[in-house]
Image (cartoon, rainbow, N blue to C red):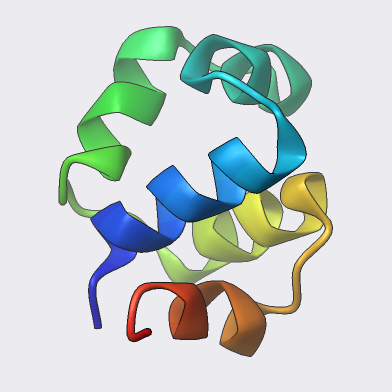
Length: 66
């Protein structure tokens, strides 16, 4: 599972930046940068990311496996 790759692909597909994601999730850009580079993230935060990006969790994870 490569969540860094999942983030990169999902953000590019949606035409978003990390800062766009942070704004929509009401968190800091630094936090998004941390989790997109492999930092720890709770399951509930992963679900929030997926909801914001309009992916099911399994779809988001699969992006990093292709």
